[in-house]
Image (tube, rainbow, N blue to C red; front, side, top):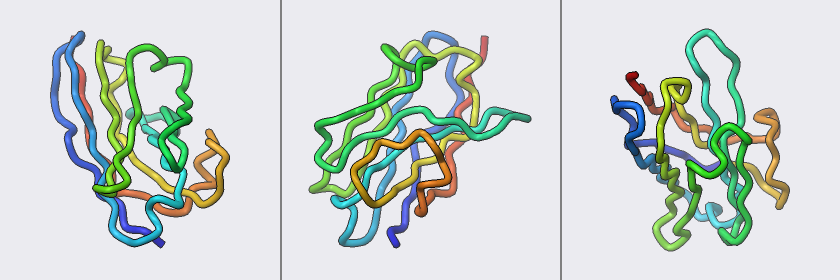
Length: 124
């Protein structure tokens, strides 16, 4: 299992940008599909984006498509989530997660390594 640590969250005004990082320890990082999920206040965790093992394939939820970009640097064992055009409804705790295999799954139950979460708050 790989250990994941998120960073880069914070408070930003609507329309602003943030970049989240997910740093991984362990030699299996490049074998993992990595996803970002978020949990808004009082709501269930939801899929945001996922990236393939090589970084060549990416998938996004409809709510963030065109505003967020997921990328990875396997040499640095890090996955990024660039968030532009932030909206108040993007306010949530953001988690990165890893899973073996190749499928960019939107279902959080298929991910078995999770970070502790990073708070993102977007003010109106």
